[in-house]
Image 1: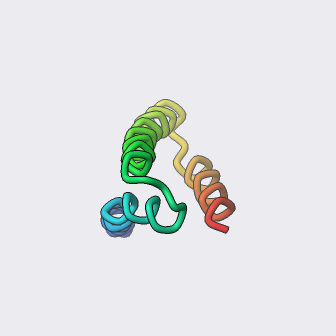
Image 2: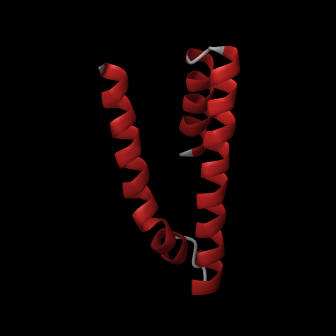
Length: 80
């Protein structure tokens, strides 16, 4: 049950961030509408592709803790 609650929280937080990412790229990084669209599409495609890769790694290694720890550390370091 806790894993389902965690998955739901991650799912909701991703889509909350995803809803504002286009405008974030425009305002904070001073991008044009066209460039912000490219950045947004690359972000969506890249995050989807990365999810599939991590899912395959977890499936074949049967290890969840190490990928989760590595992703958590990378996410913490890139958010400044």
